[in-house]
Length: 431
Length: 204
Image (cartoon, rainbow over all chains, first blue to last red; front, top):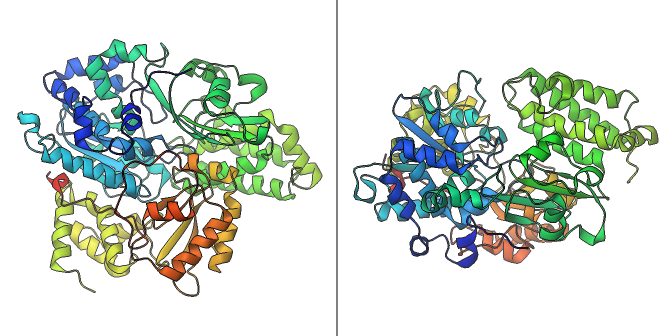
């Protein structure tokens, strides 16, 4: 079964030069930007709302709605979030590296809709090569008069600046990203009052959109909201990039509609489990999402509704597959270690809690686990995310701390016997 | 060592990209690292002067971010991803092989002052796991053996410029996705090979 694609179409059809402006323009590029220049803010916001486009950074909020919340103060800013750091996620890297003009055109459309004249692309520091490709594309667009003063011969000015991050996951959180772009420590701000659309960059109205989100816009403006909706599931319109990794035969980014099942994604699209092994569990939406298991979820459709019912989320689209050779305690520890390393340290429950979670998991894995440790893990988690429910509550400014609880809830819900076998057997039963 | 007039001109261009000077702190910190090889006290002071902040304000930013190195690292910073997807495909073995070959524990410079091996969290190469970076240039689909060979090769040939394509061809395996057009640029030190400003993109 093949599905229609648009985000990855150009890079597939023009593998060696999809990054260049000539190829972009001969395949319909920059028509949408010209069209958008003739549209009003209201028309653009309504079109994007009608398309059902949801943000691709993880929170799945309506992009058009986000734009409609822009406060009236000016200047307003656009920051494109290319800080992609959620373990398992590598889709934005492909979009940046393989079709940067598609994103730039999305930036032009977003800027026009939100009366922005200064746009920033915040790209994680480790993405030096993708940044070089994006900068070259920006330079090409300036040369053609599509960026800079009076774009496309109109009186609209627009500049784009790439801002390189410096190795902190937390900067993908939109208010932390704004602090980082202001030259500060990348610590998240309290919401309310600091919703970027009201008080963002320099306390001015700011739109923060993910790379994949803005990369969808040229198609929506060119083909219309209905054509976009027709590409996908009625509740999750358009196509999505799934980053599939772990123990599958064919890991990679796959552009697909939502609504297909996990079985189709893991077995048909990604080629099934390596070495003919059994599927043990998978992480459906990046490290922050609670795990799913084959006995309960393999034939569920991949939709927000179904995954919410399974107490998890589709997040950033990163699907991490684990086969039956995986020790769940080790895997959980590795995930928790990430959050512990990346905690910004502002909030005590997160800073201290993630450190403790990691320490307890480690001693269980190493064979020094105590009988009380299973309950202790849940107790620590409960102090970070009270009630251990889904969607998670939080005692912290941002969701990083609560995200660290997801792997713990996962192993205690689905693999408690394996955890206890570690504690009773003096270490990992898998060796 | 003082900054040349050319470098200061470049710093002015960076400052010109932002509505407020403070926003230039991070790109200027990278510039200071490129100048001194790591982030020195002098670098911090210069960035403070240029952005009209106090050195301690700049220091508080610099120490927050992993990639601003306040201590010297080797000429080749080999960052081994040990996050979940790489871990599932053997990253811990890659890490121990890298440490053994370098002969120094994670984060420390080797005896010859050439290589520093360190952990890094997810680098967005999960489809090509396990993956490493050399001076933030990506190599995917590595093995414990190929990383050991790579470190030996870095020591022996001491390349001026570290290019992702070359490393991938020599030491890599399956990538996350097919690469596009070749990229001639590469890294000359343990900081990202990206110097964005002063092109058309800095017009604001």
